[in-house]
Length: 118
Length: 110
Image (cartoon, rainbow over all chains, first blue to last red; front, side, top):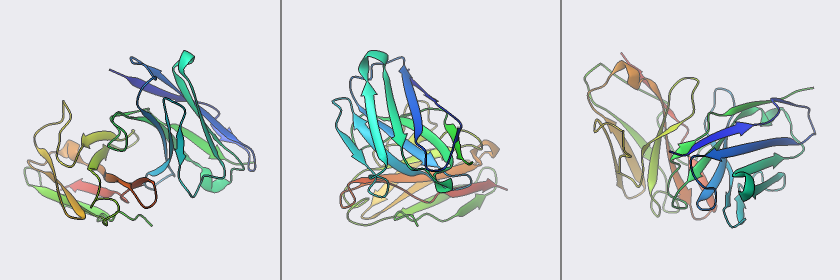
């Protein structure tokens, strides 16, 4: 069974860039859609974007100017960069797998809390 | 404000049946499958229902999903205390070209 694990700094200063990596184990990253979703404290889920194994990306329009996703098949990892962060970007960030494309998310990481603060 | 609308809360006594609604539009639920996720306190969401009404392996048949037009519903029968969680619906939106989540429903087992 595939497992996902987020990693990265838990504290980022305002105006800097948030960087997270998701490591996929128990399966190959070389298929499927790989997604980032976030959840501000006490709030609901927000889709950030996905990267297809081919490298094609699609980002939430509200975040598009600040988001970059990449994929490293040799390491079975994919990554998220969110630039110019503010306190509003404080959230638990989840990576997830969409096995069929635009259908559902069948595997999720445990989540990584990222706090934006000086 | 979520474009997929869920009631913020729902409740039921142990053993009872509860239904949670998810209302959308033609560009999301009306055109694409709905999935449901359960989020226990302090944990990541897990897939409960995919493709409107399909239960992944390991999900009890107490959980069922349905879709009609631009609305979907998650039903939980035989409520148990461990069902206390937040429940989210999700669907792709063709107009936004992105995923939408409902605002979430907090289920309380009385």
